[in-house]
Structure formats: structure tokens, C-alpha cells
Image 1: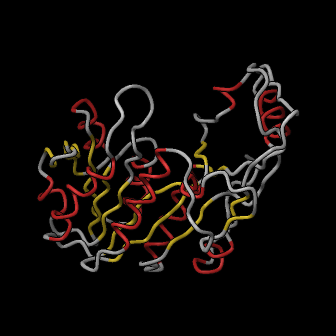
Image 2 (image 1 turned 180 degrees about the vertical axis):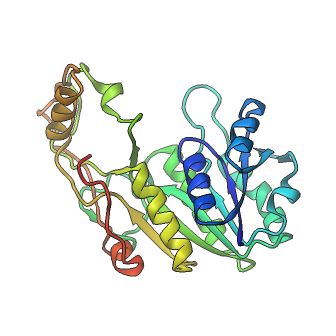
Length: 267
């Protein structure tokens, strides 16, 4: 049985860890909350209380990585609000522990925000041009991990994450004068996020970079209006005075290399 360490058992990491267990992996899972330790333990995940800091790592990081060949890093930068972190420094603090461990392959969960608001179709060959602090730090971390010769890193750039309990419409319902009404959406369902990660592991597709967004791209106005009505919410209104800016994330490489078919296209 292969052993995998999932750093960050949150909204995506926890169901991912459970899916790995179903595939007969032994799974170490980390959380920053002591309250969640029993939740992980109850489903068969070996739990660790670990927190990345800018000047080091707190918790039993060596034991967390011990005997694992794969490390999945699923800890998005916390850059909203007043407590903005240095995500790059946190990953730099983690790397020496990876280098001294049995980890051979790293899967880093990144975001299509590394492309910025390019007003065009985007592939993995598109130059990075992040225009948000989160995108800038993710782009730097991608480079740091990819260029480390001690392990192979695959970068997985997700579009906007949605699921049964999560959709942006809940935050923008009834809002007025939103920009970019004609910009395409680039979303991906939790089910496909997990399916793609499992396929990367199954195919041993390491040292790669993949874009991952469901290949359905209606405009923001069309999608969020329909979604609001479906959920009995008040649709947002949009400002059409300025030209809409927005990229379309293409996933041809992922579909071809991994022989992957998206499961949920009715977003």
C-alpha cells in the first residue's frame, strides 16, 4: 500500500484524502485545528496538527512525511483581510523537510489566477501575468517547487472551486453593477478536482503543469443569473458600460495526457 501525505485537509483535501483511502492508499492528513483531529481519525486518516509559519513549521512534520512517496500541498494563501501572510516564505520553510524525507513526487494545488485577467484563451504555455497578490505568490511558489531537483512537482491550476455547498452566487446574489458581464466563467466542481488528482497519481504524471477548469464557459451574466434563479436567490445586475475582460481556461493538455473526461459539466 502506497502512502500519501495530504497537507491541508480542508474543503478539498478532506474528501480527497477519503478518496485516496478508498483507493487503498495509507493517508497522513494535516490540519491546523485541534478540533478536526478526531474528524480525520474517524475516517481512517492518520492525523497531524501542522502549521506552516514564515520562519519554520510547527508540529510533527517529519513524522507526517515519513515513508510517504507523494505529498499533496493544498493550502491556499490567506491574503484577504488584515492578516496577510507571506505564503512564499511558508513553502520555503517546508522544502528542507521534503528534501530530507522519502517524498519523491509533489502535487501542488495552484490557481488559474497566476495568469491574471488575460483577455484571451489560456493554455499551460501562456506566460504568467498575475495581477493579484495571491496569484503573484502562487506563481513564485510554483517556480520554487518545479525547479527543485530533489523531487518531481506537478502543478495543478484550478479554476474557481465549486461544490454542493459552495458556489460564488451565494456571495454575489442581489449585488448591483458588477463588472465583466460578458467574461467567461472558469469553474470546476469538487468531484472533478478529486478525479483529476487521482488520475495524475494513477498515471504517474509528475513534473507536469495542468490547467483544470470545466470546459463549459458561459458568460458571467448568463451563468450567475441562471444559478440565482435556480437557487431562489435574487440575480445580480451587471454594468455593461466597460468592455468585459476575462480569460477562457483551456484544458486540452489535461484531457489528452490524463485521458480524463469531466464528470460534472452542469455547473
